[in-house]
Image: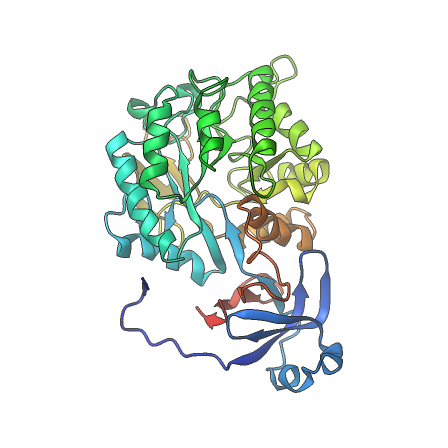
Length: 421
C-alpha cells in the first residue's frame, strides 16, 4: 500500500548515488565539512569530505553542491509523541488521507519517523482510530501508535476528557492491541489508577503484548511511581527481544509538581533515568517547560535518557484559532494551545504543542544543550526506545533519512529513504 500525501504531485527521483555536504551531526559528534553519501534508500558513507576519495567516493562528494557556510546535515528526526499537525488530528481522523496530512506536515519539517498519538476517548472510538492508524503503520508511513489514556489521573488529566477516564482494564488493552494489529508501541498510564500496577494489571498486559508502558498524567506519590517503574523494568528485562526501557510521558507536565515535603512521581522518574532504566520525554518547545529545566535534566540524567518530543496537535504549522483534540475544544493564541475554559485563570490547561520537532531541537540548543546532544535526543535515543536500528542516525547502512538546515536550524531540505520530501 502506497499513500501519497499530495496526490498528483510529481516528486523527482534523486540520482541513484548522491552526496549532501555540510557540518554533519552523527550520533556522537559533529563532523565539520562533512558529507553523507546515499545509494538508493541507504546511507553508504558518512565522514569528512576530505576522506571521501580514500573511500572511493571522491567523485560523488565533489559533485555535490558546495554548502553555504553553517549548513548542518542532521539525521531525520524521530518523534515519540505527536497528535497531529497541518490542521489534521490523529485522534479525529476518519480517513487515511486525513491522517496523512499530519504525517506530511511533520515530515516536511524533518520528522521522518513518528508515532501517531491518540487521546482519551470512548472505547469504540479508540479502537476505530487504532485500526485506522494501523493502516498507516502497515504502509510504513508511521512507526506505530501511542495511546495517551484512558487510564490517567482525573486530577492530572490536562486536555483529556474526564468523562472517558477509566480504571485499568486489561480487556480494553487487549482489544486495543488487536485493533492496532501489532502497531501499538507505547501507552501512557498513571500508576495510582486502580488496575494499573501489580500482578495481572494493565502494566503486565502491556509488556506481555510488546507495548512499552509510559508513566504520565499522574498524581502518584513517589512510592507509587517507584513501584510501577520497578515492576515494568523487571518485566521488560525478562521480555524476549532487544532491551526496551519504560518512558515518562512529558516529564513535569500533567504530573504532581516536585515539592520538598510531597515529592510526587518526578524524583522517581529522574532517579530511574539516571540509572538508565527509564527515558524521560521533554516537550522542550519553550512553552511547556522553562529552558533551564530542559538544560538541567539533560545535565542530570544524560542525553541517552532523554527524548525531545513535540506533543503536537492539529495546529502545528497552522495559524492561531480554534481546533479539536479528540473530544476537547482547543484555542490557539500566540502559538499556545489551551483547552477552552473561561473559568481557568490562564484560559485553560495547555493542550499539546504547536511546534515541529526541529523547533524543539532549536529551543533546546538555545537553552544551552549542545547541538549533538539535542539532535541525539530527537533521533538516536527515540529510535532506540522503539527498538529501531534502521533510522535515527547518520550511520552507514541505515535508511537515508536526512535533514539539511542552515546554521539556525531552519529547514532547507529533507530526504526520507533517499527521496526528497
